[in-house]
Length: 198
Image 1: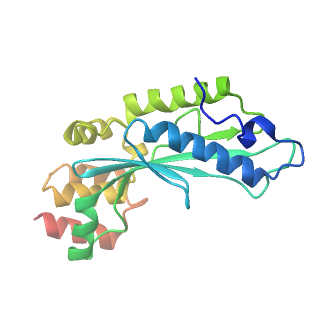
Image 2: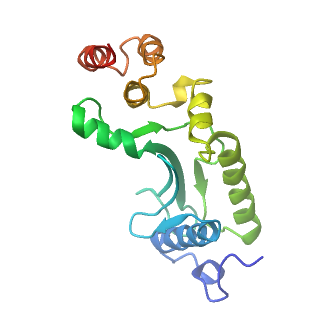
C-alpha cells in the first residue's frame, strides 16, 4: 500500500532536509490514513479526532526542539479523551479545570524517531495505534469506555474525571476523590464536588 505520493519528501529527503518538513509530512500521512477511517485531521496543530456521542478522542502529534537534521526527528503521540457535556458543565458550575478525562501514559508508541521512516515502519506504527485504540481508546460505546476507565484510574485525568462523574450523578465520584487522596484534586474542588453531588 502507498501511504504517501511518489514525489513526497519522505521518498526524497537528504541529511540537510529540515526536521520540521519531515515531521509535517509524517503527520500529513497519518492524517490522510486516519481520514479514510472517518477521523478528522487538523494540519495547523497536527492531530486526528474522532467523535462518538458525548466523547471525543484526539490523538495529538508533537515534535521536539532537539531534533537533528540527518539523524533524529521526534514524533510524540499523545491521545486524550474528552467530554463535550463536561465542557459545558464546567462553564455552568465553575467547577473543574477542563474537559479531558483520560490521558494514558502506558503505551509503546509515545516517542518515535521518524527520520528514515519507510512504508513498512509506517505500517507498524499505524498497527500499534490501531491496536491501542481498539483495546484502550474505543469510545464507540461511551458508557463501556467510562467503565473501563475504572480498571486503572492512574490513566485517567483524575480531577476532570471526578467532575465528569459528578456531572453524571455517579456516586463513584467519591471513590475517585478517595483514590486521589489530595494529589490532583485539591480540597476546594473536592468540597465543591461533594456539595454538588449531595
